[in-house]
Length: 149
Image (cartoon, rainbow, N blue to C red; front, side, top):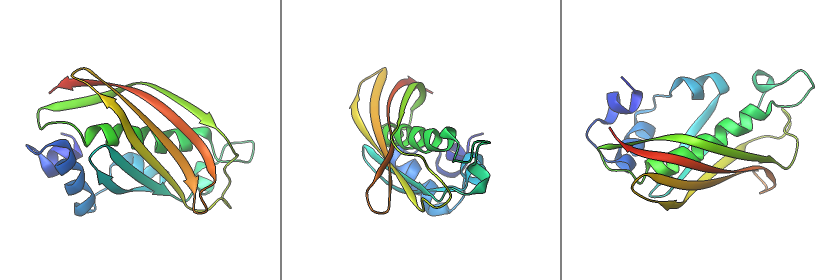
């Protein structure tokens, strides 16, 4: 069973995500990469984290997968917030653009995702990854499959 089903079964997507944030439980990906789900409203979701040594690659910067995971989470949950209680989604495509290198000195990063459009079978979302002063480090666009549970 998924964490959303455990904590918020039968609710629409926005209510599920609000309940997930309120209960304080973090899914495994948030634990392993040490970031948090901090805001959600209809069509918008925000994740935040401080990259550290746990996210480093062998060349001395934060691995691109760290940024991609925050961006994918923001895109996905922005879409999830628009779903009915009987719908689910999965990412079909994620395109990430890396604008600046991320290091342990970058500080707090916020990934903010927004739904661009959502239909019966497909959704399109975008997200940005910025530091506390608003500098853009990465951005993404995503195509997601919407399906009945």
